[in-house]
Length: 388
Image (cartoon, rainbow, N blue to C red; front, side):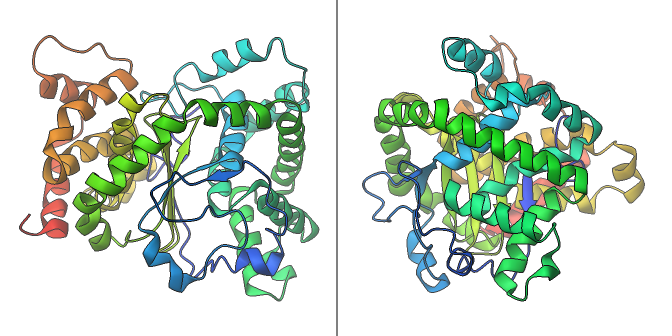
């Protein structure tokens, strides 16, 4: 498997520039009529209800202030991919050893259709590695029921957005079609969704709920740390990079490599790892920095590499490192007290032993990038942050 599904702009940032997905989408499609229990939670203290029904109107979003949430359907979807993919990235695409741990856990569980269809699903992933970009799809929807309804409409339309006269329905179909454009891809998606449905009913739903109970204090700690301390420190950067509003989704499947979708200044979703303990809560802030800095690192990459370098794979060979390094540079400007922890976290995430000497030297050696790109990131941060 390639290290990242986004060869030109890794790691894991998905941009869909619609003037609004409007998330009246959910109303139009009647996706959220019966949101599933346990599918979304909001820690106490955010003052924001979970998006388990019809999502709020655009006018309401600025008051949300990047709430911290958990979403069962996002975890379930990523769990399915994690059980199918070989994960060889320097910073793993999923929690290190996730597949092995889940297999061990499920040996005593009833076999599901995901088990039965594993080889078939893996075969198509090998044939078309671009299918990994389907990992972003659940971030556009508020619940498993919403997403299933959208997928059903996508199948009815045979993947053609123009099959509907409703612009919101067309948008929903286009989102899914972007990840599953061909007929064989649609059949893969059909098998994948049916497999996840069975996986959810037989195993995953109860396991997910148990995990949320066990990690409730850790989730609350992330929410408190973000809302009371670091949201204000990130505010200027987020506003000046068209990321003023969105949601932070804590995922059981992820670790140092998050997932991000961008639909406009107030329509962003960033999925980061869900910590197990309160002491690990700050790790979610590390990964958030790693994700949102892509707004700067992508510009630095595009402006300082040629189309030939991008086509040849030269850029993709170090693009993931660029984002890791960019996150450290961002924290140096916004929250320097977090930098050493960030460096240690990503060294461990990258499978590196912590050094006895300089952290900075070990970090730069583990995640090398061209000096021109490093300087360009610093210039971009100066432009975005001005005098702070």
